[in-house]
Length: 84
Image (cartoon, rainbow, N blue to C red; front, side):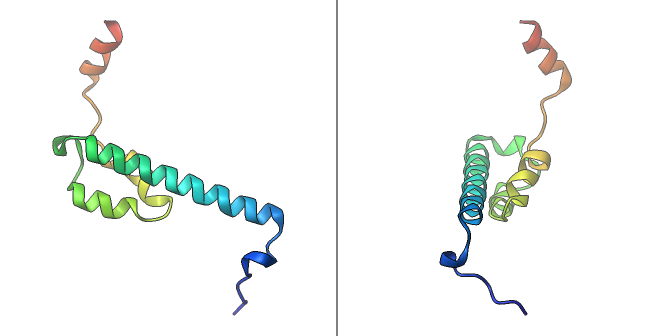
């Protein structure tokens, strides 16, 4: 098994990529948790506790929440607000 590199052994580009990936992950999770906290339980597919735990899974969790965890408004409601 290969030995993991220490932070000091990473190139400048690798360090930057790690920091950017961490920031993206944190931003996705924070946005998903904020949306989940503000959204009524009726507008969430499944339980809010389950989605709170899923969001903690790196990258996949927040993306899954935004793709599958939120109920989409009915199409007639979307067209009414667009016409107003």
